[in-house]
Amino acid sequence: MDPDHKTILEARNLRKVFGGLVAVDNVSIAIRKQTMHAIIGPNGAGKTTLFNCISGLYRPTGGRIHFDGTDITGLGEEALARLRGDKVGIVFQFFHLLPSLTAYENILVPMEIAGVADAFARAQDELAAVGLASRMQHYPAQMSGGEQQRVAFCRALANAPRLLLADEPTGNLDPATSDQVFGALMELVRGTGMAALIATHNMELAARMDRIVRLDQGRVV
Image 1 (cartoon, rainbow, N blue to C red):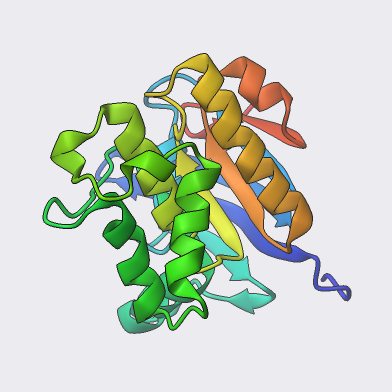
Image 2: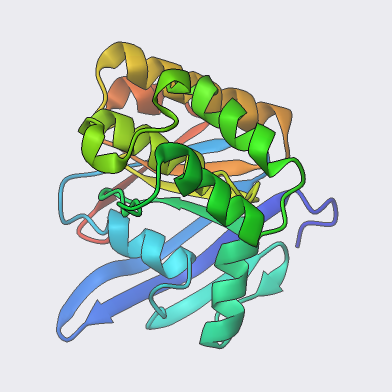
């Protein structure tokens, strides 16, 4: 138990099986607020499946998941969707931006849906923080892959989540931009009660985080 309520997420003996394939095998991890955890490992190690279990997109085959002290393992789909909308930000490997909306609108719309105060100013500030102040009115098709990735990053932070799950969030960024985006994220994590779990192949990035968790064949090694 965590009497000080500093643990945002705790997964215990998490397991996910697809047919005969064990994708996540008895993984336990605890994530405290204001910390950044790196998940590393080869392709197919189970990183994305672990993320999907933690976010409620997949139901684990075994184990328990506690979010802010509440067991969410048996929640229904509607309750899990509310959890993702209210407390979890997700950056996917593929950006999933709405092509008919500008970069600014892709961030503003989820903020407005979530009832975020000062949504207009916050959307502008987030884009400026990742170097996209001059690209706010551009559509995804008018932007590079790296620019789209930064917009997706900002959108994941639109609801001021308790936990950010990011799957290779700097994979399409050049080193200077990667450093800028990571610096902005680190500042946000340290300055708020948020935590971040980041899957990455970038060992320099991983080394700057509070903890590194290595997965191989679904297990922590």
